[in-house]
Length: 84
Ligand SMILES: [Zn+2]
Ligand SMILES: [Zn+2]
Image (cartoon, rainbow, N blue to C red; front, side):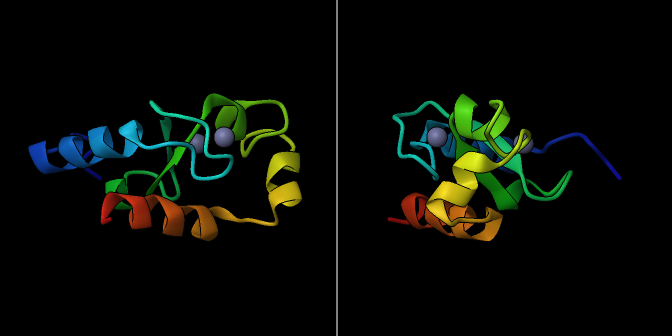
């Protein structure tokens, strides 16, 4: 797998990172969570807490359970905001 991002992928990631958090709507800049490693176009915009926080996606996921959302729900929000 080629890990190097091309210009289009870099631009897409930069756009994702400008969005608010797809889970809690915290104002951007956000981090880009990779739904699948090396797949840039399925990245999800998340704030630090919802992403890497103790109860975020890479933690216990409690924040996600409270919102009753999974990665695809959040990706849908990220993409909806990108294309609006
Ligand atoms: Zn958040
Ligand atoms: Zn992540």
